[in-house]
Image 1 (cartoon, rainbow, N blue to C red):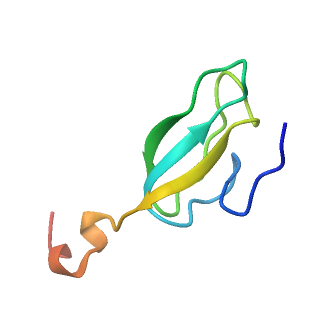
Image 2: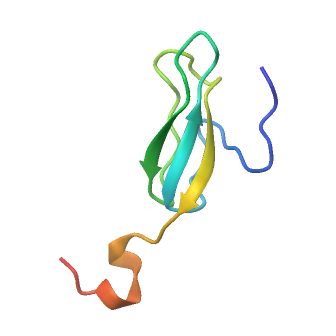
Length: 74
């Protein structure tokens, strides 16, 4: 298993930005895929490869409720 790069995060880390993250699993688990993660969420471990999973931010985005033009959105 390789060490996490400066732009990859491990299970238990807190998401630093909201957006699309590429999920990289251990080879025996599954191929990489994308997920949406909201800033402040604790990154989970994988049911298949446990803490060997890594998360890499791909596209950052502001949550609609955090955007100044939509703060009154309910």
